[in-house]
Length: 443
Image 1 (cartoon, helix red, strand yellow):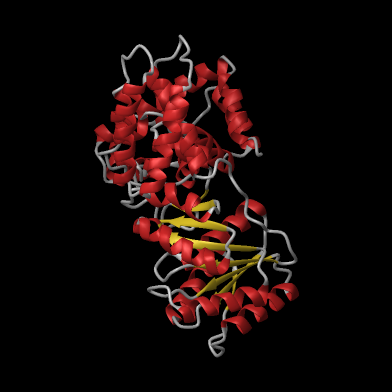
Image 2: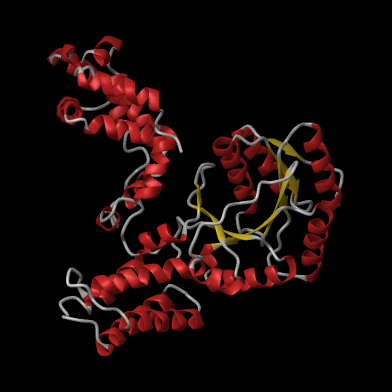
């Protein structure tokens, strides 16, 4: 997402590179290109025009510091205005209530049911909630079955009534069951349509009135561009929802919906879907998204993902093993497992400043560790514990057992030895201890 916009903005800022100071002429040239870039990304015309006017006003009012160049000043201003355009600050989801009730709305195909499952998973794993999913789409048996499958996959209960075709009664009965079973959050998935129609809007309004949710979220497919913004406005006029969820941001989307929707409906974007897996849901932070749009990466989100996977006690134990040069292939496998749990590898790499652009045209397979794991699993327990045991004949056996070559095994062992030496050096300087402690510390 945003790759084309990032490239266009970079080209725009280059117009200022080498300029001694910001002037009305070079700012006008730069912002003309910025406006084109925003329009190409499917940003609403009025919003693009207002955005560039604000940036121009602030740029011309800046006293350029001697340590900065004009293009750096412009990047800073554009970054701040992009973050403000998308809401400025992160807004939490409301989970107050006994139980908290969350209503999910949107058009058919926007990803409501999948998002409902992802949200339940996030609340269960990160907030220790006990959610109940409610199958409120009475028109599509497939949606009910999908929700049941997702619930089983993440270990969350699902309320469904195949006999009742009244979504209001289903939602009220689900809340009653949640109270009886100590579910502290109820997530009500509702029916969508292929287009907005009066019957659908009256139905969703009736559901909202009957259950009085503390949070109503509008789910929209970001691939639909400006249509997503227009649909959001119509839904908001009828439902007055509390927040927006953008799905499919991992697809080939130009990003205009993310940049426009906040200004049009004046409601915060709260979540973004970044893949099909149940953990592929990110809390939306406007400033971090502005970083990514401008190619600055997103180190904060990367560290947060690492913190979720790395245990402080395990990190300390590992640090002691590294200091004694006892780091082995079992530890290596454990580290690989934790990295894989952090998410899509290319997405993780894109969070590192400068790396995302370098990897733009390179495919990083999520099974990139598969060959490494196969080689390690072909080792005996003793070999994994003490890599020095792996002589020539053992390397041939490991290569045959893993479907790789001796060269592959040699390369892995060499890289492992070099990594172990580097980690020991860092440990001696105290850097490894601080790094592992920070990684393992929970917020």
